[in-house]
Length: 236
Image (cartoon, rainbow, N blue to C red; front, side, top):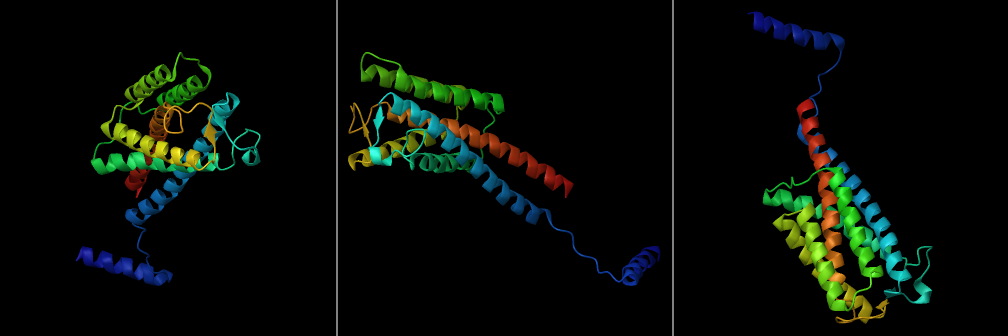
């Protein structure tokens, strides 16, 4: 009797106020909206980081005459072709979003050194590897390539150590090297001293290190999104 009278009283109260109860917004709809928004934010941040690194690192290559662009395409204060930063930014966004997606698909969340200080050190090492390829003089290209390969693998071992990260790094580096060869072959730009099919033999090492670096940044950003969604779900 008490339960039925309570329910009837609640219905009379809603009817007396002239309002109809609205069902609360489910946590699933809220999570989907937040996930889409955070995905766009992460993509924009990764794109910005990729553009910035492309401008800085390509400046080193151009200053040392490692890469040469035709005079009519050099149109920025960083002495770089206009299409280089957007392409690098887009690739960085795709890589940074792909790494945490692959981790979730494999069911192996990456938890090795997941803090921003480690990510910043990874970026610093990547910049150092690129700097070495442009400004450190070696006896021959083979010695330079072996040194950069060791440094790149050391970067993966120090800041990643995941099989998925290594596999993606190698695969994307090979694809990027092939794309670069096609660009050089078609005369878009050139290398001053090519020693491996129109390009420099150490280029895959730079690509590999860059993929590992952007993957670490993407994983770190995805971890913040995961924590946010968990807190939001508990609140709902």
